[in-house]
Length: 307
Image (tube, rainbow, N blue to C red; front, side, top):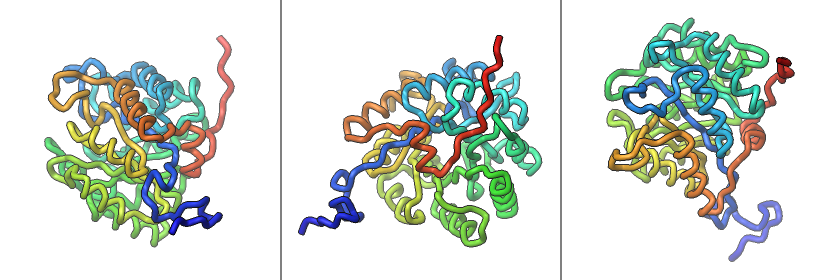
């Protein structure tokens, strides 16, 4: 029998998409990361000016969240808040509504003072979100160490500063950690999860893996699918079909094709996802619409400095 309950707008919440209408899709652009260097691809932005310029291009083609890493003069990752501040200010001067998420990664440095320094930024350069990896894991060349005490301290600091955690998920235990943090009052809804699949030392990029992890999420969680290396596109496409959102960018994959013959750009990868989403009937969320989904206020606006 067809559900005609007006409270559900004529569809049952258990109905599959597209019988149940899709939400607009949030594109989260992870544009730099910690690994790619200019020797790997000339398209990875590493200086402040390059990151700002690339971010603006990404926003113009559909990104509503920017996942930001900063680099030093040698292209190495830096935790320095002043570098992040320059990047955030440059982006917000052009697009004040875009959601900016900064990294608190433990892959290169693991002292709380360094990982949390970026959370001290305030006013016009205060980040909207910050990454929170909910467990330790191995990458091909190094480990990301996230001890329970560190996770809770970072979550507590984000809560204190009014910065929403971007909950990074690589396996089922990390979802359990998120639920534990919620019970203890460290995090609160609306939740945003990045489910990142395909790394050789964590959950693989099978569709059954993505489906299972999504089934474990808290009700009404906002989630995005991302894939590492050659798995980026397939996980992105699966997330689009399943009604989720996407994380995409050179942080996770520098190649445009599976055969690693053509290097990509952040802009080009986003444009491809936009075409796929539109073919499947999913509209692209604006930064303002992404903010509404995530319960985020607009940043403090500072008038442009006259020249």
